[in-house]
Amino acid sequence: MIKKKYDCIVVGSGHAGCEAALASSKMGCKTLMINLRFDTIGEMSCNPAIGGVGKGQLVKEIDALGGAMGIVADKSAIQFRLLNSSKGQAVRSSRCQADRELYKKYMQELIKSQDNLGFLEDKVVGIIVKNNTVKGVETLGGGNIYCTSLVVAAGTFLDGRIHIGPKITEGGRINEENSSELARSMRDIGLEMVYFKTGTPPRIDGKTIDFSKMQAQYSDNPPVPFSFRTKEIPRSQKLLPCHITHTSLETFDIIKANMHLSPMYSGQIHATGVRYCPSIEDKLKKFPDKKTHQVFLEPEGLDTDIYYPNGISTGLPGEVQEKFVRTIKGLENVKITRYGYSIEHGVVPPTGLKPSLETKKINNLFLAGQINGTTGYEEAAGQGIVAGINAALKVKGKDPFILRRDESYIGVLIDDLVTKGTEEPYRMFTSRVEYRLIVREDNADKRMADYAYKFGLIKKKDYDEVKNKYQLIDKQIKYLESTKIRPNAAVNNVLKRLKSSEIRKVTSLSDLLKRPEMSFAKMAEFDEKITSLPKDVVDQIEYEIKYEGFIIRQKKDVEKFRHIENIKIPKDINYDEIHSLSKEIKQKLKYFTPQNLGQANRISGVTPASISILMVYLKNKNYAKEKVKRNEQ
Image (cartoon, rainbow, N blue to C red; front, side):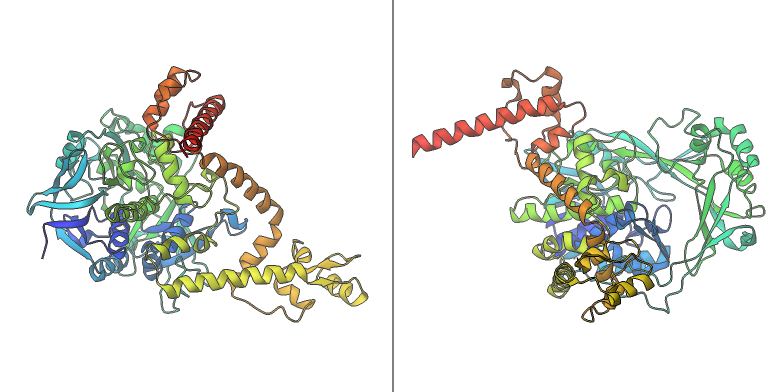
């Protein structure tokens, strides 16, 4: 039975909404998720894949915080791959193909079974606000429902418009109505709205694909799970290959001849498109000299023949899609089961958010996912879990949860959004993360476990397991550092056999392990106490020792970074009285309202000289306050 008052309401049931609702309810808040349909919970609107470069790290962090995406991906995956596996741990990223229907099924089961979490099939048409504070939502069928905290995770549904050539349909996803009333309500309460564009390729019938003309790409064996709580992928879990093909010059000729029918180039869409996942029309415009583009064919599931041709997202008319798709090698006789389309949707500029993802204008209103200008399931889920945690903390009257740039990819994502904003759909990359040597996939559990346990998002058993794992890693590293071997014939003969140079002085096992050709397993040749350990433990031991110099240097950089991050800017600061700051700098600081000097430093156009002036001003202010306190005492 739906009540009329909840601690937290979550609008939307995509990747952001699911993580927000699960986090809030796990933290003991009576939570209600509202969406038009229960059967679209966990829908994969675009390609059936989780993770990727920079995105796999987000999934690992979500999982380590107690989120659902990693576990659901592991259970529904039909292919696993570790990207950049030949490179260092800092840039390795996990990715999996997921069975689209299984992913939804397992996510829906989690939502259904979660304590403190209810679901309402209804349409939210308004947000109730009093004295600049959220009080609840207005629904189409259920009237007003009240809450303390509200998370809006509306995806592409705010004023969503679908374009297939000149044909325009209002909708948040194909065959699903949009949320224009909610968008209007958000504007009415004072939130600004801009528009971004994304898109999807046609879906094709696998029975009509000639795979013999393509390159197969198989799953890693054995597959490495996403979740730290998944011990292994069962052998019974069926894995499928993906396939790679390429466009042809004929493909380009057809698209070029019909470019005037593309909504992005006919003037029909004025919204900003995705830079890093462009449509095939964008690729031809932006890379005119490229002769061919890769098409990555992804199976949509075990019980369907439908394939997702990643790389040919398009908004061209259906008849043009039919023509150009059949010019691609292996797709000459293909049957299209659903046309691709472009979609433009409302976005609230994220510079209007606090780092907790609460809006600056409306208290207790949190936004997460594509509504903040991001693209991708993983970016949405990362925001969702942070918004859900903070919505619950708001109910409890506790300080917000803010992840730093030096401790997480999620921290970088949110900090980029709220301090710099985004003029195009934002996508996470490893290159955005300054401290990726210490913020890696493999140690996400170490970085996030304390938070997850503190908030009640993981069980004590899982928390203890993480703690024991890192105690073992630290113990082994210390043992390798303290254990020495002396140069003698026996030792040097072993080194020679292992194709490593001889030693001429007393050497620690850790120094020996730093050699490129040496591994942890080979240390057993020099000390019988070195025994086999789990692969995830060994990988971290090797990484921490082999990259020790780089890691120490990066940790020093983090300390410098934290110094400026720890200098708080008071909420009541009056920038106008800092006469040394230019008018432009004052305007930017007033608009972005940074919480500390680090955030102020990352605002575009705020100069190092301005930060120095601000630092001196804050120190003088603090000194003056301390002097007054001493005099009063």
